[in-house]
Length: 252
Image 1 (cartoon, rainbow, N blue to C red):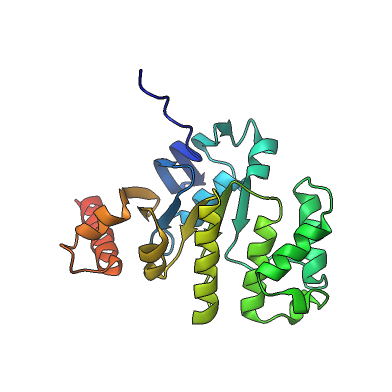
Image 2: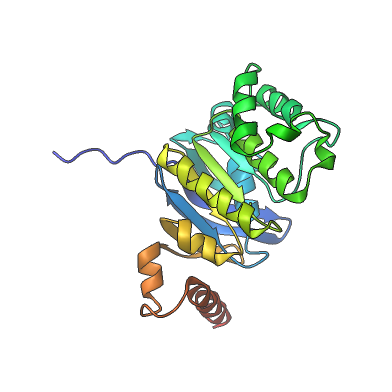
């Protein structure tokens, strides 16, 4: 008898999200496997952040269903929101709190008791210990990005969303974040990454999905997608061609 199929970390089934007459997410069905890094790519306005919002509880899908480790994000929202961590595109912490205070507050928001040791460990991991008591508004742009990641991890999420995590940061910090993403994956955290730096997806992702105007064009293993270029094209070129082909099909 064959082994049962493991429950995916994320399952989206026919998900639609409308804003009035505008359909931002169009009948998306997608599974993300436990323990993988999944890159969700698409041009601006493709619906990536809208879909992530529906999964993480920042929005509500108009129709369809979304499950996180088998739990429905609407019916079982108290469970799923504790299973999920989100690093958003925008800076979203109180500028008058210190990094240390921000992490303690975030623990409370996620239903956890204050754990100073966990906060201190994250500050050390993301090289923020020397600034633990500074006002967060005084941090550099790169330090603010580090703090966003630390906040998302403070409650030990099993599914982590990184929405443009390295936008506007320097090369050194980008590489540090790449190392941290790999470490988290190796420890069992499932990661969904959106990025316009396609070399990140090429280096980090196990599988890649491409969205265009709310439609999921393709989901493939990284090696399969790179093979589309005959072995002599980078992911950036393949991505551009997929988006252009999708536009042609939509126009026909």
